[in-house]
Image (cartoon, rainbow, N blue to C red; front, side, top):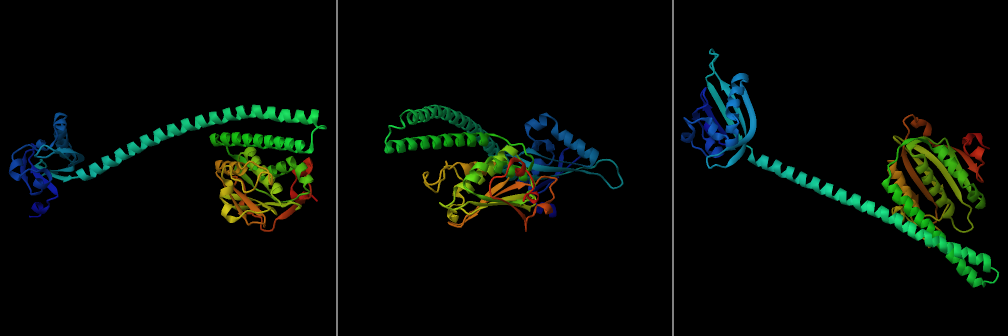
Amino acid sequence: MVLNHLEDYAIFLLDDHGLVTNAYAGVTKVLGFSVHDLVGHPSSVLFTEEDKKTGVPEREMETARMYGKSLDERWHRKKDGSNIWASGLLVRLRDQNNPNVRGFLKIMRDLTARKQAEEHIQGLNEQLERQVQNRTAALSEAVERLQAFTYTIAHDLRAPLRHIGGYASLVRTESGESLSEESKQMLGRIERSVDRLEGLISDLLQYSRLSQSEMQLETVSLSVIVQTCLRQRQSEIRGKEARVNVSEPLPSVQGDSSAMEHVVDNLLSNALKYVAPGVRPQIDIWAEARPPKARLWFADNGIGIEPRHHERIFRMFERLHRADAYGGTGVGLAIVAETVRKMRGLVGIESELGKGSRFWCEFLLAPEEEPASTVTTNPRVSELREAPSDDQALAPAANRS
């Protein structure tokens, strides 16, 4: 009674030679055969022609005979000739006191819906993989074309730019005394435009190279990087009578030293540049540990940035001020953001209009760095009223007066 009510399972008995001796109601629902159709026939009628040719039914019985059961999933044939994907369990039967095989019990379950779903998913995955491969190839080709285009444009633009700058310089040298004040002003505009365009081309080339390069991370001392950049900008710091405070110690992090120098130098340059007229720049630099990262801060007393522009300033060609008010190409902070990202870090800003800015960069701490030693809750401050000398620049803050 129980076997006849298990309609989702095809259950039948086989003798020792594989002939069906009895079957139950589920064979009709699962396979389309009636009990009369199967009894007295070999169970191989349920297998596909390919499996019968390769001896699958015989191997299944031999496995069950030797190990007590055989379990597999494969295509089976229904009465109407269609195929279903089914799991099949063939169990060896024998009397309790007789070691000879008495027969076999076969249980089958229709898993066609699951098989079709798996094949559909596999097809979708293969289609997605092909799309990814095609789009990756197209993207690589587009990047190569863009890179070639960038270098070509840079070369084709730089040559005439040099000519324009050279001719402007020649006119100023040879005819400077005879030029009117208005002509001198126009000549100055030409020279400044040439400088801005030359800077923009350089930034674009750097950004293009950066997007294609892979950085090899190594242990880098932030103290050395910061002091190196301060030394390189000592003339500008003196000229603007800027005050730079560096809180030591700064930790060692994982990064690319030359790329990190560019990041620090760009943030220093912005802090020196974006101040209101007549205001003496004040820059504070410190670091704090946020394991597994360290955050390097640059705080200034500049003009500040409205919160709604905080994300915008890290995009390409985004400028919040006229070029004649504050120089720049609108690419510098985009290069900073991409460089930090390449070093598996983050960059951000805290700022309000008219209240200065606090830029920060996060880098992975060096493996040997002790996190507790890098937290600067009450940092020792080194005040640099002008750029340090070469010897001072690399000395710890505690050793400088």
